[in-house]
Length: 448
Image (tube, rainbow, N blue to C red):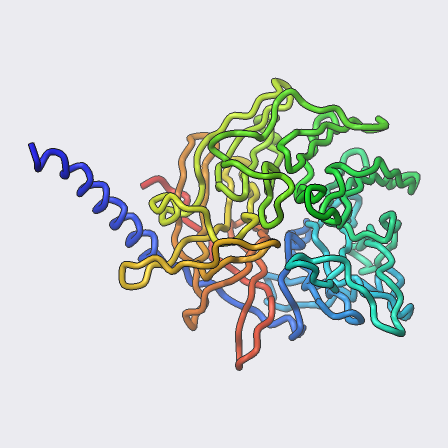
């Protein structure tokens, strides 16, 4: 009788130990590149593969007077080309204003052009949180983030307009069929629309209280991913309370969906508390095959399906790494991960996510709390795929550079037609650290 009580516990411990060991034993070796921008800092989204097969990306800058840089990597030749300085592309190069330090958006292709937006990279720290940078003497304040296009044939940039109230563009998506850009600004969280045909920009006001500009009970973490129903053009986003807001083109406001993101599996959150995404989805993608969205809740790592026609969310599976699933703990990046997208078959999801590190059988722990989006401790990076047709999850293992370094601060992804995965991550060489392009070999999607 005594043995029968402790036997299940023994097997549980052994199973978790085996899972942790197996997940860390599987290794993927990634290639690293040097784009020639030594001050490049952490980049979010800002990478896509265009119809010409090139990988386009923006490397961020925290400098007040050096903006982010846009590059193109040609997989056929292995060459990297500097497309341009995004501050200069916005027409702000010589104005002595706080630079356009980042792009926080993927590139969206339409009519031979790539559409994207810019964001501030120069910040001031207040109570451990990033706030819009206060310029020193001789500099003008940040002018606001810009919506830009880049002509794939000519390499010409076009300035399409600037965000209101001198705010950066934190979140962006494009309805490529209807020529509409949608954005959420930072730090307040204004929702803006831009009609490419008429060049008309509309500000529909804040989407989540005072956003990340709020203090105390007025603080709200802003949604990082706008969802667009490609069939009818309806737009969806979330707030920290977990409401799903729907916008129909031409409307003067939002409609609150009956469905919401307040699921027990996602965890319990105080929407006014910084350092987490609350009940916001972290990243979300439209499935043209199933006519629905697949998304991930960042902090918990749960994959879900949102059917807009039925106004229903179905929680599917936790798509964190095997090691994380075994540990039962949240991962180290406080907001969760943005590196989530469909592959070329439009059925397989690719996800770059964290995994705890065990040394001598002990979990390497980070700090308990943070007031901003950051990694609370060291972790491995794993590549996960999820086959939405057959509901097959697969952890392909931990990713390392050839010299054994771990990719850090990974919040971007692009998947080529051959399944090769590209991202942007921290790289340390010769004692200095920069963010740069990383190439991960195509995983095997065959069932075991």
